[in-house]
Length: 233
Ligand SMILES: [Zn+2]
Image 1 (tube, helix red, strand yellow):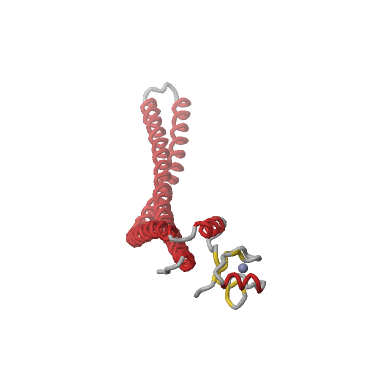
Image 2 (cartoon, rainbow, N blue to C red; image 1 turned 120 degrees about the vertical axis):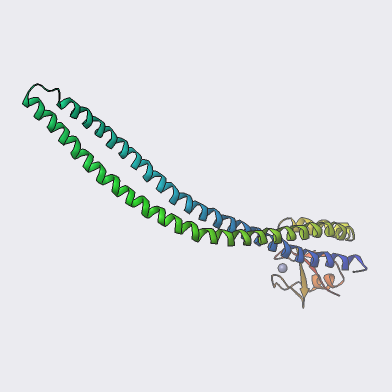
């Protein structure tokens, strides 16, 4: 721990570099947890879509069945009516209507069986998909649990760092701290080392007078990148 205010300022700068890295790590972790959640949702949606398409086909099959039943009822009614007709012409007309309805039923039945073939195939595919995705979902859930645990750990670390920072700040000269914090509010790296007469962040050569002052621990910004310059002693 630096004993003089200048060292304590540099200590805060170094601390903030570490802090920024921890924040990035936390953000990357949070992003990864979200990505895992998205993958889970997508897998679940895939199953839901497949299940829904089976459901829709079954609804259509039920409608066809209803139509077939209606026609069959009508045929039975007409057949009962055949016994009560008065002449051959009426009989022939009724028989013609019955034949027409039977034809309709035959067409509907073909469609009905086609749909059921499709339903069987889709149900089979759905079962395979569910089995495949069940394994994938389990793996994703496990990954996600680990991810969230790590995220919580990083979050706690960040909270600790935020507390540590409050303590560190107390040791820095208020004027320098105010300069540093206002610069820091505009971007994450607010300070840079002055090395061999240049700013180590943007590379610009410092006026020799400035560099001389910086070496005497005067804190001033780099003319180009505006970072506060300091030297390590
Ligand atoms: Zn610079």
